[in-house]
Amino acid sequence: MSKITTTLNRIKDFAACKKDIILLLLRITIGIIFIQAGWGKLTNLDRTALFFGSIGIPAPFLNAVLASTAEFVGGIALLIGFHARLACLPLAFTMLIAIITAKLGDVSGFSDFIRLQELDYLLFFLLIAGIGAGKYSVDAKLGTDE
Image (cartoon, rainbow, N blue to C red; front, side):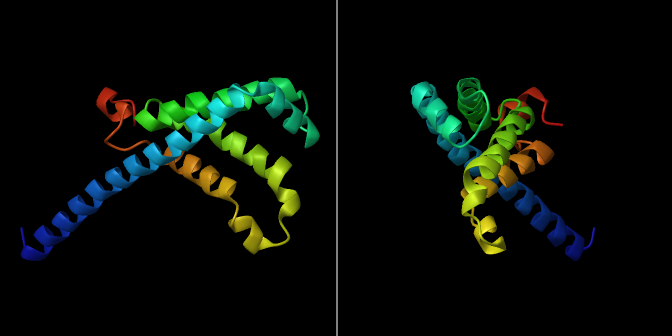
């Protein structure tokens, strides 16, 4: 093997290791955020349902339960990387609904849209749904992150 090939393989291995560390840090951070957000909604379902109703979400109490549970349980799954791809789907859907119902009215242009925190979360959830939780996850240990 040539020196160039050896060096390129080392760079590739280093980058792959960093990718998994970055995925872990993102999963921990966003998992904690969504555990807290979901718990806050679950413990205040009446207030959450009132808010959902005020922005025109149908069946506000049912949707408050669904969104809160998705955030809380999905946040836990994301944090530990357990069925992370699957857990990210309802989380992504929740962010899409949040953008459409609660945030889009405040957007006056593309620059406002790309600054939405919910868009960041949506893209992160789609990323994890597509590539998985990484090697530092329960999914990787179980061999289910394929």
